[in-house]
Length: 415
Image (cartoon, rainbow, N blue to C red; front, side, top):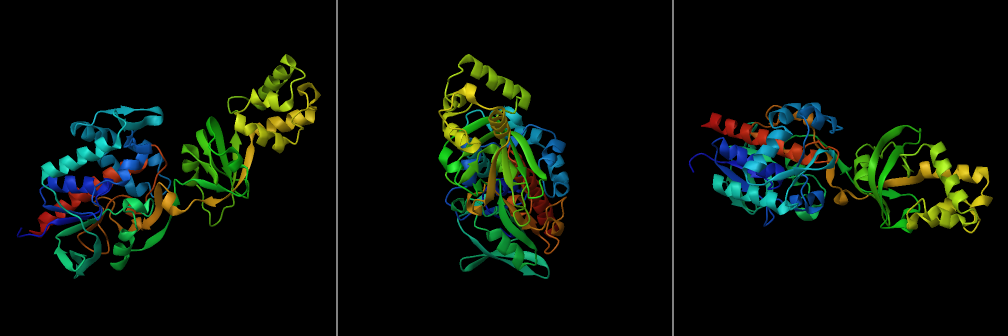
């Protein structure tokens, strides 16, 4: 090959998409990935089902990106969810849309998405090498190569798509931050986003394994400011809280300045007066039923002893002996079951890493570095992250496409 190729560093979602579009645009591509298999992290997204985008408009995507959404405007409008869906269906992956616009392969198998990309790369003639990028070679402000082991691979352009720090077993070990920093980029400290939360207490451990659907979660800080409020599903664990609602909430919390409390509305469909009326009806139907038995008609079994403790009512007290004050306390606790939060689980347990390469140092229209010509970024290595629902993969696909096409255009300029 007389003219050096475009070197892609990272064979995840963003790296594979960048490699495909770069090759489609006419540039030779070498994909570097230390793992034996490509797309390791894709295997575990959406609980192994691969929630690959969200069936919404570009504006709908940007609304679900809490930080730096303006930076992504150009990429999301260039390769919106509708086009991403068409892209995968053209690759032979039939799709379906579920609750909340979440898009999955009809087969519910992440492997089908990865296989489709793998064979598309093969058909396109993308070269592949199992190696870890150690350094970028920069001469006169321009990237000219990538060092692996004891060899330097010449490169006409380089795309860094190494992911963040979450799930390090899949290869997300923060290499991209190191490579970017070495050429002068600012790295905003990586932190866990979309991550389970630890409770400052032992309440959740008593209900470990209990999943609640259709509850409303509110997270407030020490000033009682509402940081997050949404209805959905959550899970109690030995350390605290997990599940879709909790992962979304975690993206709204700044642990450096906020001390937070989770408030769970166990009956969001009922106003307090209606809930009290329901309790009075249950008591009237069986006046001598013990308080803990009364609760079993209202709450999941694992929650009952915890609620008994919380409202400080003797478990064997007959329902008709409950005072108005005790009923009031029960209603208030069911509408705002509070749990003080200690902080997030470690970054390695996070689905997504917030932080990374500062977006102000990247051209949003091309994903090219403003620090070194011929260096491009795609995906989670940049300081971009979104809520759950397929939005993070949408970011990977659209920034991957833009970086790939732009790198190919840059490659042609060097001819």
